Length: 226
Image (tube, rainbow, N blue to C red; front, side, top):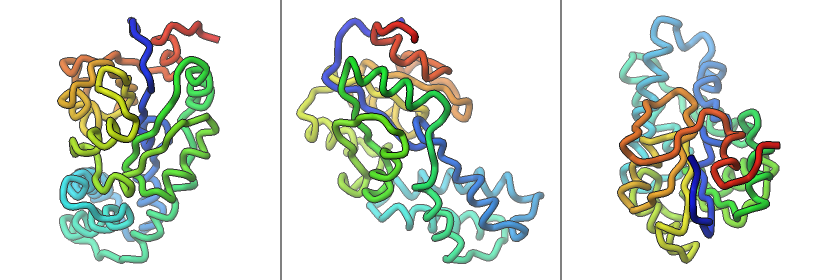
């Protein structure tokens, strides 16, 4: 278990992987009693599916990704859509903090290798969320900067160009095979880490190291546990 080569960078997905991306909780709170219990789970499930669908089309700001996915999900379950509620959900995003243990693991890993974020957030949110992680990042790459969202392959091409690296010179870390690790594998990134947080299926054929405890991440790079 671990990597035999020292990469130039370790690149991270941020929302969901490092940041506790609490968008389902936010939608429940903002919609309140307007989201009946009998349709809530279905609404949240298809809203997630519509978000990735919106991410794979032409670029649009992330507040529109949130809004259009909520609009489509509302229509699907017969709920009235309200633009101000979608904006309220979007505006909660930069207040979210890291999963437990993330800040400690990142700071430990940063002693050995430079850290980079590549996120589907827009630039303003990306900066604020990265600050919430309280760890040193060399570069924070936002979807707004790239003009494209993961899982689009262009996102990884942009990252390679921005960092001046080849796929074998990075390790990519994500909690999402769907948004990140499939595309990373297609783009030739052999060294990958799946932080399994239990909301996607393990796709071990993608050839990653799977961890369930973020404290194990520095160990993959030969650093002792604290």
